[in-house]
Structure formats: C-alpha cells, structure tokens
Length: 442
Image (cartoon, rainbow, N blue to C red):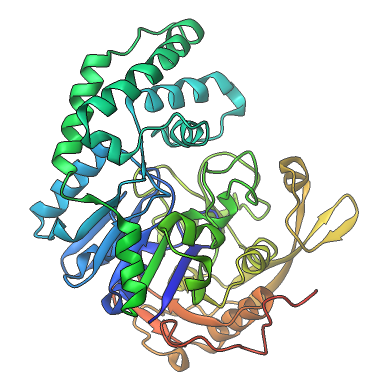
C-alpha cells in the first residue's frame, strides 16, 4: 500500500495531470482534494488529448476508481458536461465518485465572482470567474450547499431559500443587478443532483476501506503551492489550501496515512493572472518558453507568463510540504537555449534573501540573483533513461536537486504519455534519504 500526495510546486500548470496519469496505471484510487473547475489538467496519449477540469486524471485507466473529494467545490453543470465529453470518447464514468460533503458552486457564486473582480479594477486578482472563491467563502461562513443537499428536494429548497435572500440583496443593492429566481435555481440544481445521484456517496468510507485493504491511493492537487491561501503570494492566490497538509483532510483520510509527498516542478516557471513573479522574462528566452511549451491555460486559454526556474520559491515549497521527491517536467522546452539561468536567491533592500517574502510588495521588490549554466542545445524528446540525457542537461537537473534539497524521481521530456524518465519509484516503500533531510536548517 502507498498513499502518495502529488502537489504542484510552483504557480500551477506544472504538468501534474501527466504525472498523475502515468502513476495511475499502478493506482487503485485517484482523489482530487481541493480546488474546482478553475484548474485544468491536460493529458496526452494514444487516444488523443484530454483536458480535465473536475474529473481526476486517473480516469483513463479502466481499473482505477476516481474520487472528487470533500475539499473540492463542484460545479455540477460543468461536471456533467465534462462527464458527457468523456463518455462520448469511450471513457467509463461509472468509476467516478463524488463526496457527499463536497460543496456546490451555485449560480450566484459565478455572478459574485465576476462582480467582485470587476470592482477591483486595476487591482484585480486574475480569477477565472468560475465561482470558486465565493463558494469557499460560503463554505467557511457555514451557508454553503453540499452535494448531499441536492439529493433531497425539501432540504435543498429550504436551505436555498434562506441563502438566496442574502445573495439577492447583495446582487441588487450592491451591484445593481436583477435578482435570481429561487424556482429556477431549485429546479435546475435539483435536476443536476438527480443525474449525479449514483455518483454521490460517502467517499470517506470508501477510502478507509481502501486503506484497510492496503490499496494504492494517489491524492491529486489542483493549483500550485505558490497559490496556497496561507503560504502563497497573497492576495494573488487561490481560495483553498494547495499544500500536502490539506491533501488528507480534503480527501477524508487521516494525516498519518500519507506515505510520500511528491512535488511537480516545471524546468522553468510560469504564472497566469496578476501578482509578482521575480524571474519573469520579457525577452526572446521567455517567448521561446511560451511557444515551445505551449504555455496557454488548459481551461481558459490565457497566456502564461514565463521565467527562469526560481529555486528560492521552489525550496520554500519543498520545505513546507516535507517533500520526499521532486518531478521535473518540460525539460525539452529548454533544448534550444545556449545558456540557462537559475534564481538561487533574491536581493531585497540591500540584503540577500533565501526565502519567499510574506508580502507581495516585498516580493515585487525582489531582484533575482542568477546562476548561469550551459545549455545542451540538442533534442531530448526521444531520451528514455537518465544516463542518455546530455551532460549539460544532467548538470542542470543535478543543480536543481541540490537547490531544492530534494531528490529527483522523474523527468518529463514530452507531453506524451510514456515520455518520462524514471529515476526512482515513488510508489515504492519510502526510505529516508540522508542527502536531503527534509527538516534540515539552512
């Protein structure tokens, strides 16, 4: 048995979907534990390209059960559309289960997300406007609607009637928009509940039985760790915790059940939306990364900002998550560059900084201190083993490993399934690596 938490270790878009897909071949369960339809995971293999929004990336393997955990906020309309798309491509959706405790993204959440973002003006966060933040607000304000509520017509109506009175006051009095209809929302969303009834269940009980039976469980994060609500670049963050510490509670598992934490890093770094990004590039190197890496949002199509690998932020994430292993994706995107830089520290107000500042103003003022390495300038997409990689590529990976203080487990050299070099088996029984003690003091 192995319970493996797979987290994005940057600002998202690190290639988690591909890594989860490849590991799912050996998994019994894949569980999404946070986020909503604002996160997209792209998987490419022999059946073509798949873009997942709420469905876990393990769904393509017929023997793997997939769970949308209690920590996720679910847009049922979007989920049904996604399920239909997958069914039309021959994917069996009977293996998809939804926690009865997961909160529902309601129509007023979409509206309020858009209104609030527009009201910020120049200070906008860069939200996808998919209702995620307002849904989490309601969850913590204890006025949320959960998937189980959609299954009982009277309970759902009573809760919705009370909540909608408050939401309509906000919509009409603050934003000057027409109110929403109780009858329309109740009929539409109760209908979604009926269509999803066979999938909504006590997923916590399923997973505890899986633990008892010593099954292999993958916990799939959505956004990256630098978007975490507590430790990300606040306020330009998502509305949930993306860290490994939340993986157990968002799935319905005890914390001690997690055997390993694996962080997925891109060989460079990208970001969408607003917020400071110390290593952002505006030159030809950044354009090469964007073009070769197809750096556009899976769900939104938004252009991603590109920059050199930020080892300060990367090590910060590794330490916070107690990372046992790291995965590097998109190494091939750097194949044509003559030189490659790594940010090893920041200069802030005349001082050398080795950790991520807490305020966005300080992070915006940080100047990256770079270490420059020789590029390999040859095609790595056909490489199958670590030994076959060009010497300069191995030097680059070795330096990342040292700066992250975390051993590398896998290196991806193409978006295609199977084009991933395995250095260590992350599903094997975890062993302590004395080279990179997780709690070492710097």
